[in-house]
Image (cartoon, rainbow, N blue to C red; front, side, top):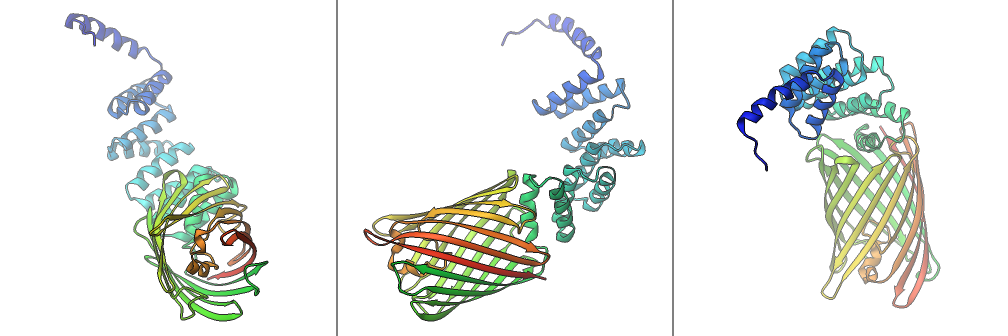
Length: 410
């Protein structure tokens, strides 16, 4: 880099200072923003913002930005002093309430943040930013009822708000302490089996301080035989970002169900409305089948996209199963149309007893749709699925499924 003599720098420095002093408040504000966002030099940006305020003391946008700069620079007392001065002036700008409430939320002063947000919403009742932050604050306080009210109000303003949609789905898991449900699945085969299959499941879900727990009992009539299975699943929370899936099941009716099944997954609610999962599923009939799963999901406006794979290794090769799912949300987190397409059999399907004969190594194509809707605390679902499966090498058959479900939350 070219170096200039010291005496030349001494001559240039006053010129630079003079030109900066002649900048307007708007020009200094722009320079402060560029210094903060591009150079991440908050002290220099603070100096520029203060200089701009000397020229225009009542320039609210600059004051709010200065408060944000102090917040990012972890100078909380100075940030609060700026915001309190704006409060005394009776400022009603949306960005002021958002910046002030964010300061308190990020520093665990949730009650103060809610007071600021409520005041801001009295002036801006349809502010998406204020409603979203209010939902986040209540969610962080484990006040899921109020969080649900805030995010529902936001989605009424803008149903395509991606971040609100993702948060609404997470909140919905905690809005009711209890839920009882019943599902019925009907399967018809054109070649593979002579008898239709019927499966009924009854479940009870309880929300606990560490996460939800589900107890489920299943009755199946397959191959003109009846059998039962009991399952227990839990979703313990590790943090606001991470939670586990832990599940197990038992049945004496091997062939209709696996004798044992276990599963564990680590799930993550990631930034930018992404989700991810990594885990395993194990089914034991007369031998164990181990399947490893990975999934990634993304919320975008009214949509949820998900891609999941199951990988089943054995001594000779590795079998793969892939399923893509798209949901389109119509209203709340329980109201959506879903479309699914994929290959292979997954251990979560009602046809998982077919895995005992290693049919997962043969070719399977599936496509289906589902509709879920809610009426107050009642949830209804109807779904259909078509399978085209190679049940013996070189021989394919069709399967048609219909599934009905009802859940009551209380």
